[in-house]
Amino acid sequence: MRASSRWTLAATTVGSSLTFIDGTVVNVAIPALQANLHATITDVQWVIEAYALFLGALILVGGSAGDQFGRKRLFLIGVVIFTGASVLCGLSNSAPALIAARAIQGVGAAFLVPASLAIITATFDDATRGQAIGVWSGFSAITAAIGPVMGGWLIDHISWRAAFLLNVPLAAAVVIITWRFVEESRDPSRTHQIDWAGAALATLGLGLLVFGLLEWPRAGADSRLVTGTLAGGVVGLILFVVVERRSPNPMLSLQLFRSRTFSLTNALTLFLYGALAIVLFLVPINLIELQKYTATQAGAALLPFPLTMFVLSRWSGGLVARVDPRVPLAAGPMIAAAGIALYARPSIGGTYWTTFFPATAVVGLGMALTVAPLTTTVMNAVEARHSGVASGVNNAVSRVAGLLAIAVFGVLLTGAFRSVVNPGIDRLVDPSTRGVVDRELTKMAAADVSVLPLDASRRSAVGALIDHAFVHAFRRVIVGASVLAFIAGLAGAVLPSRRQHR
Image (tube, rainbow, N blue to C red; front, side, top):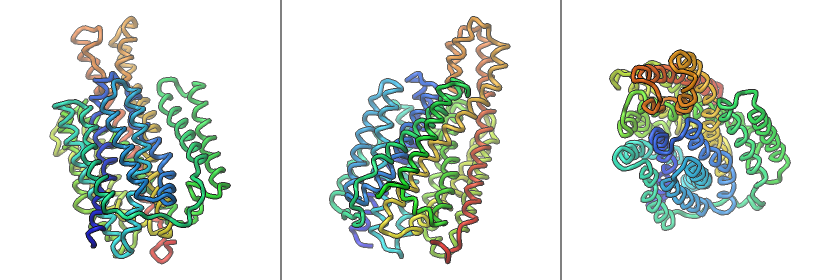
């Protein structure tokens, strides 16, 4: 491997890792955000969803723009926007301000992420691309592993604000290396304007869907706001498909989906990454609020997942060259499904090694077996000149999967929590103090019972009830996530054989 190729691989892996670090740090920071910003469970869902919305909706534009205007250029623009927004996150003094800064981060990541993988695809040939992608996946995993531990330490000893500033020194190094060593590449066939109409409709459709789903638990399914926004989201996505079919240069080329391999691998991505997003959102909340881990301990508790991916990703990246892709892409998600199901076992208390460690290790094994072969199979399913668009589509699917899964399963989480907590609260709390209690219940496991106008015994009983209700809701949602991962494995099992790949 040439020196310039090694530096290119370093820049793209560290650059893309910024987004992985940020995602995992935010999950560990959620309890601190709730305490410091007085955020409800819906507020912290929006902290996650605002980022995922703009990343998922605009990542296709990012892939297309990179192909047209230059992947190196778009990669650098993405890194700068993302890092600036990270600083804004650290300076936020309210939940709305943090949500807005997270949305800007999503815009930056939409340029950064597809360009990083497209640069790798353009730099390495068929013989070395699989291993390069394996390195990209593995180092993304190891930096994502460091992120929660470092971020957790900063949260425990300084502030959640400092956790967002982890991106700044890494981003500075990425900009210097990219400017010096990465060669520019583009798709010469792309000469038309960017499909901004498609981008706007995708953002509008997904945004309305997510808004309706997040408002559902508070306003109720019969609310005009909920039904109106959900209907508007569906209409927006239908119009998006219509515009993409008629556009001379769509950001989402529907022709790519004529490849059965491309379609099935993206379906696998949708279900598997939806399941993973639910786990990464809820498990840190469980660890910190119910199991009473510190933020550092919660970050460390998740280490077996990315470490397993780091150790095995280079090996699994070469699997596609040796075995039929159906083998790792069926087995990997099903192993992950088993690991996710294991998260439903623990209640409150117990040693980490017998409660959360087995689940985390098994999920890591399943994802390690899946990620690099999945990425390589997706990229090999299209012509190399369309690598930017293919990367954008697959990354968009993975981000939209998390966006929709957290919104949809948030409805299930809230419903399951209320089904247990409300009858108990009716017995324990007088109607005169119910309003104060209900305001705290919007935080779920983060509810502060010390502020409730109740005597000590009833405060203790309400606290125990909230914990019990959250465990019940957590288990319901985790089982649903496991089912999603199993469906992803079925998609991998029915992939075409290597001879039929395109």
